[in-house]
Image 1 (cartoon, helix red, strand yellow):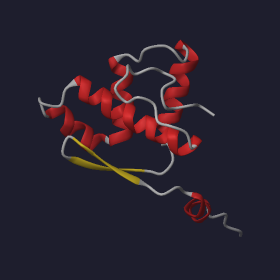
Image 2: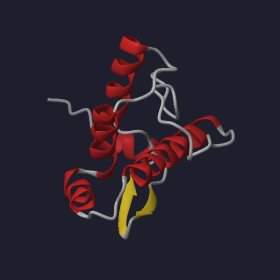
Image 3: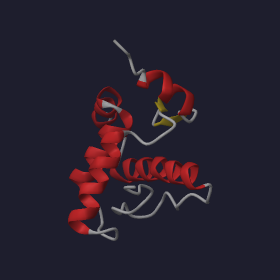
Image 4: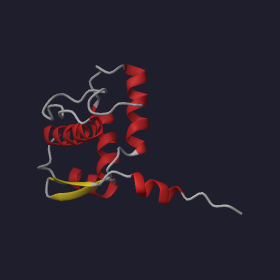
Length: 122
């Protein structure tokens, strides 16, 4: 029986992870966009277009996918972690992924969260 080892192949090709500090929590991000993030953004873009402003529910889903359920839950429990901080953190991370993949300049992290911001469904 032959074994195809995806884990070994992916480990050779994986971009280096990066760490963000978000409101006192260090979050290690994978070097490439998480699959759940890509699939969620593809659905949003297909349904509403690239220029659609993300709803708070869509922002919540993205943040949970990026930060993981434990850290995201801790952030939500902290009353000083506001919606503008959440939006800025999510947009900055998405912009970082976009920059890493394209070699270009990051998007402005302070803008409105849009379906086409920082994540392309390729």
